Image (cartoon, rainbow, N blue to C red):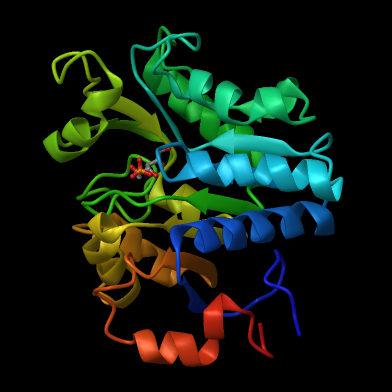
Length: 272
Ligand code: F6R
């Protein structure tokens, strides 16, 4: 059986459906660890949000249990809120240190996030895009999905060719993220995000979605028409995307039987 790791051309969106969120998270952690096992110097694209917290916990537990080192790994996060310094408790810099970086053997000098407090956010966004290119591009991009189909902070109407830039957040996204802040008013209105074009340039993508709230966005992403109205549909143009779902997030998919036939219980198939 071939692995699901990086460097295996597949030319399809691979949909893996697991019975529970826990199983989906474990499967996703396994794919990430396989990528590091195959290429210890991998460049990983990382995401934040509620979905990723149990995934990072699982990754840490398995990294310790299986002895897989992150010492040579480089990371680039998808996004950061504009206006927040790295040590702000709601900054994604802070999230990443707490959720992952402080708990694995990664070299902090090899971890990257855009600076939300950069004096010139436009220049910061351009420099971030160049830093990704200088690192040789992203080997495996981890993604969550917003209820409105955003990936990173590429909100609806993002150009499918977009690169790292400043994006105005939608009301829906701000409301979804407001619980982390003191109030909706305190929730940032802008973010620096890597673009859909930047994501499409990565060698492989791993999207993880759990829970019924994501079912509609997932169905659009996998089976809908490609449109900037649902930015995640851009992934249909990527040759190597794996979507890992729990059953609740798979509810609105039309072709569930097919996905489960090809990948019973989320397993790899004979041809990847
Ligand atoms: C954040 C990011 C976002 C989230 C998405 C889902 O870095 O990339 O696209 O993945 O908003 O967030 P949760 O997991 O909180 O539902």
